[in-house]
Amino acid sequence: MHCHILEIEFSFNGEKNVLYPVVLQTDQQLVLVDCGYAGFLPLLEKAYLKYQLALDQLTGIIITHHDIDHMGALAELKKNVPSLQIYSSAIEAPFISGKQKSLRLIQAEQMLESIPEEYKTGALQFIELLKGMQTVAVDQFLAFDREVDWLKGIEVIHTPGHMPGHISLYIPQNKTLIAADALAIENGRLEIANPQFTLDLDEALRSVKKLKQLEIDQLICYHGGSMQKDITGQLEQLLMRYTQIATKPA
Ligand SMILES: [Zn+2]
Image (spheres, rainbow, N blue to C red):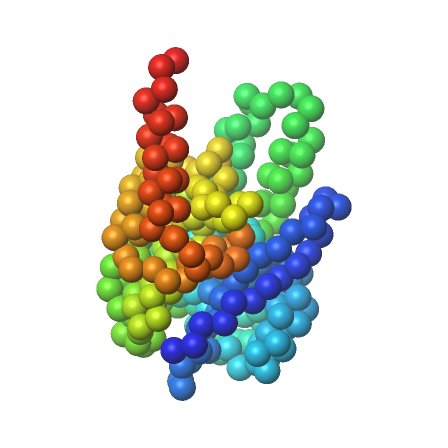
């Protein structure tokens, strides 16, 4: 099992940003984990070349959850590679396929009423972006907390909080965790990804505790890239910061 980290650089509202999807490679499978925003195919293609891979060799894609930066390019990708198999948890699948309304869209619409006037234009743009997100049918569900039978060496870990069906992937063989948005790396420090948009923060913290049980030599976050040093210590510090916030007198 090879695990290649892609580095996708792009500009959003004039600001430079980087996302880190992953490619899992075995003798039989070439599986992308998350795919970026709509219009990202050329960027994916370019990042892929670094590993002498081509997008049309992909056999499958795992979508960790239905956020637009993780599945925005899914419809284009499926159009380009029609044989591509799409995988997600059973909880996320109805949102990815559009059978249920995006939880992020529901959240954004609810928040619109309470946010200050100066942020409203940006929030409305975000809502329009979410409404325009193309949905795609999921071919197969990934069961929680066990090895994937068609992708030996990969374990699916249910890490709810950011979204209810969010998954992370663990490769026991080289002690690598693909955290997706269960964690983020910001300025060299582990954080909860966008805590203000986390649908259930307590649940997200329980997921971090669950991940702390794993032996991790390499941690890969969709936002922030990879980390190799003192991961257990970093996870402990993160949990401690949130315990302090929770117990702080009002
Ligand atoms: Zn997300």
